[in-house]
Length: 294
Image (cartoon, rainbow, N blue to C red; front, side, top):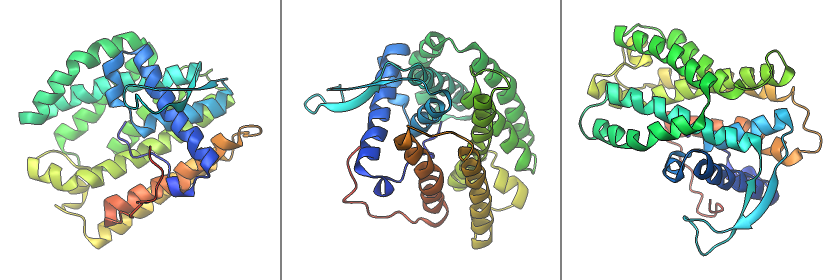
């Protein structure tokens, strides 16, 4: 979970924004309940996308309330609670964080490696509390395959991206009835979201990876040390292809009665992911001084 999949707030109506923020606060509180208070530090907007998508697919019920929290002790905010999919998003975040830290410990040295080892003190019990055996098994099957490609420095984007995307598909679909409409759609959206995240993250980290001698699929495949205009346009088109596939899969969901969730999911896939890609590739960070506070 890298934080690349989030809404573009200026395009949300006020009631949609309030629901979106309530989902963020809800996942945060669920993490405190399910995987421990310190696990809340690993929350990203990707987890909120996961929650709303699974809620749309399963029609899981949830409740809304208003209250203060550690981050906002004097300002009561709306939050979602009492949802099975909220708990799943919280637990899944803990599992993915654990395996991300394992990867950092293996690959990183110096301060970042030390920080990963310190964070693992809390991440290990959080992952154990999550009790998501199927998702953990998928991580343990697929991540070594990805590591093998990286260690061999294979000049390929499709192979590592496919493995990463399959893992994200499992993250989105785990626990849903095998072969059900919900499971198939979740897996499709998860796969293409995973490819988007892998491509965006590789572009974002290219300079750092080259400097530190780490594997990067663009460096290995194209022999580049930084993104030129041709590479940027190629990656932009690939990212657009993945978001297009996410949008096509969203079209298969019945959103009757949950129009607010529909607006959030389409906003993320159509606006949010595109804006994030522009920031990474072209440095187009817009000034949102009037943007509502999260």
